[in-house]
Structure formats: structure tokens, C-alpha cells
View 1 (cartoon, rainbow, N blue to C red):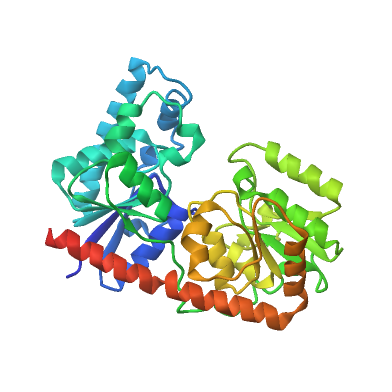
View 2: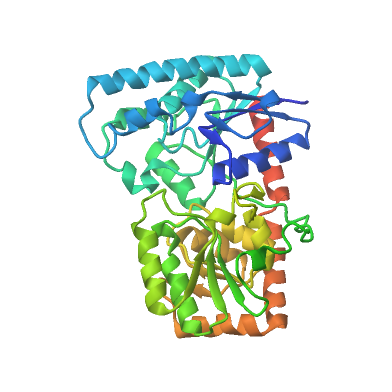
Length: 418
């Protein structure tokens, strides 16, 4: 039976985890002829299957006004409550419109009932689900209790109501074991573990002409060793450890390239990284102006690449994150068969490492023995191939589309039966 699936979030655009994983879910659902439709405040999906509601975007001015008054303080002004309810009422109406427009059978709430970046949308969605009893999958990526900035607030009542709600028509899914345990402990809500995935059954396509010159366009020569840090520049990415690794390798051929920009959490961290690289004599390059979600050209005619255009050129990937909800960039490095440095962040240690992956691993700092492992991988092509092939096959077993397909089919069957 073909179903109309309605994905709901604040944004489906770009390369954030929610946008990427929801697209994978839609691809897998289409194999069973389930048609996906999209509701969000920012969209890059097919407009013929979408409803764009600007007020649903977390950076909409009305929502920013609310957020400025609910975090970091404990008393709530009555006007804030009024604005939340008014905005929620409007958004609930657009959800009714979306469901009627496309004949939606099942909603998938992508983080909209998880992290309270848009409180009115969460309230609207909760009230809509309570009123209609429509079957819903709540796909949780980041809970409020996982972020320090949400720890002091004056909207505890709304968090209890909608982040996430406890309704019988919702099946909750999470991306790691820690979230599963915390959701049960904090809310008394059971959930299904659905890890992030990549289509490991189909290896990356061969490098095409557009991407073939990416290394040279970024100023690297054939002799250089391209260390790729495929993340945004925020403190939890632990990029100072990547700088330390390159410093201790003490090889002028090593170039550390960061693919994405700073700005989400200020610029103090990136300034610190520049100073640290200068003091350590590490060649650090931030190429965010040459990397985007889609290929293109700059105003002066230079190519703009995607992150996936860079992976084939990399000699080594650094991923020394202090915290991750899962680790999409790690799976991507495995997908492109690249040796990768890992800092044993909690989710990796619990959900990924036990599967049997082989990585050079650190625990909070770069040891000389770790540097030796990295050097051996760089110098020994046979060892490098053995390790990356092993990781690819391991990921294919545990983090492939096949794993997600089985889980989604079971979840939908359960929802339809009910």
C-alpha cells in the first residue's frame, strides 16, 4: 500500500544532519512507493511536493524574538506566552493545510519535537497530533538536555508539553543509545534506535572532471599530504587536536584543510585556531569560501566544490570531536575509504567502536604512539587499504540503508496496524 508521508521540520535545506538523514529516509520509503512531502520554514525540496511556511524557520524574526526571551532566564513575561500561543495557533493551521493538500497518511517530525529551537512549531505539532490522532514518527536528533544553552529557561512547561510529547499515536526514534536511555528516564518514553546511515551497498562514483582539480584549486600539490577536517568550526569539534597531530608529525608536506566556516557560535574559537596553528607552524587552510552544499562558481569564476568532491583527494581525515550526536562525517570518511583520526567521544565509544572499526584513536589528547600510527598509515599503502576496506565492510553491516530499511518497514507496519 502506497502512503503519503509528511516530513515536518524547521528546515530541509543544505547539509545539516536533519536535512541529510530525512532525504535518506525519503529515498528508502520511495522503494515501497511511499511518496514524501515536505513542510518547513526553509526548503530545497521539490516545490510540487512541499509547503514552505517561512514562520516555521527557526531564524524567522518572530521566533528569534521569542528565543531571546526564554533562554538564560527563569521568569517569563506574559507577552512571551501570548506570542508563543499565537504563533503556534497559526502554524497549527498550516499543518492542517499541509495534511489536506497532500492527503498525508503519516507525519515524520524531524527534530521538531526534540530540540526547542522553535517552541511554537513544537507546540503546534503536538496540538495537531493530539487533535487528529494522526500516526507520527518522531525522529529525534538532539534533545534540549544535551545542550548547555537550553539548561536555564522559563519555558519548562512547554518543554514538558512538546519536547517531546507523550502521545499514543507517536513512535519515537533516536540515533544513539544514550538518547534512548535518557528519553526513557526523563520522559518515560520508549524509543527505537535508528542510526544514521549511508548507502554502503553502492560505493562512491568515480571522480568526475569537475572535481578532478579540487586539490590544486585549493593550493595543494601532488606531494602535499592533504589532512581534511570535514566539519564546521565550533569548539566541540576539537580541531586544536588536529593541529597538534599535524605539528607532531613534523612534516612540511602536511596541510590541514577545514572545509566549513565558523560563525554559528562566534569567532573566538577560529581566532584561537589561527593563533595556535601559527605558533605550531602548521599550514592551516580554511576553504569555506570554496565549499558549499551545491557546486557552483564564485563571483570571480573559481569553482565551488561540495564536501564530497574533497574526500577523494584527502590523504587523511581528522575527526577529533569532543561531542557528537552520532557522527555523519565519520561515516562519510569510511564511505570514501579514508584513514581517520578519532577522539573517543561518548557516542562513538558506545555505538560505533564496539562494531569492530579500526581507527587511530585518541582520548582527549594526542600521544606520540598515536602519531606513530598515523605516520604508518600514511607511509604504508597496503596497511591503509586493509584498514579502510575493513571499516567499509563493517559499516556496510551496521550502518547501511538495509539496516534502516528494515527498521522503517517495521515502524510503518506497526503504525498502520494501529
